[in-house]
Length: 82
Image (spheres, rainbow, N blue to C red):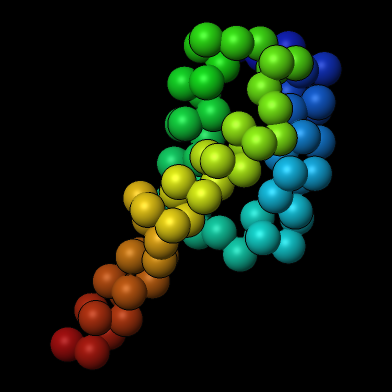
């Protein structure tokens, strides 16, 4: 588990790499996927060693390939139509 100073530093790196506006547009599921992928990265390297290109890569992997749309919103819409 990361220490508070490492969490703060990593949070700043993520915001710097991706941007707060883009992060606010992500669904909870998308953020969870990104968090899980970042946790896997942290098993191999320290928070200081995580780079902005790696963070951007995680963001793109989730947003373009794994969960490009918020399926929970789509599912809710389908249920409301019934």
